[in-house]
Image (cartoon, rainbow, N blue to C red):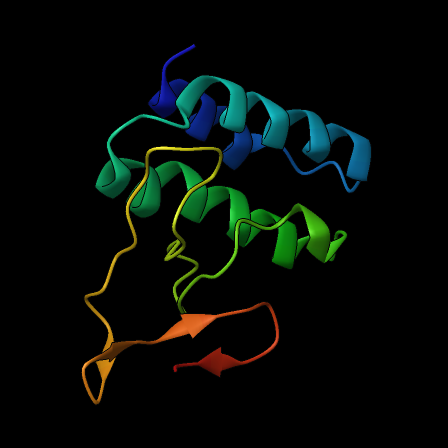
Length: 104
C-alpha cells in the first residue's frame, strides 16, 4: 500500500479502538521507515498523529516528538529518517515530547 493510500484510509477511519490504530502504526513502521522523511512528516505521520489525539487514543501510539501541527520531528520511526530541524530556538531544534515543547 502506498503512503498516500494509507493516509487516505487513516483520514476516513473514526474507530476509537487502540488495537486498530496499533495495527496502522505497525504498518507505517514496517513499510515506510526508510521512505522520504518530508513526505511522511507532512502527510502520513501528521494525519496519524492528528487522529490519535482527536480520537483520544493511547498517547503511546503517537510518533513523537511532533510540532503543534502534528508534523513528526523525531529522529526515526524505525530507521533512516533524519530529524527535521526547521524549528529552532537558540540554534537548537524545538521538539514535542507528547506533553511539552522542549529544546536542549
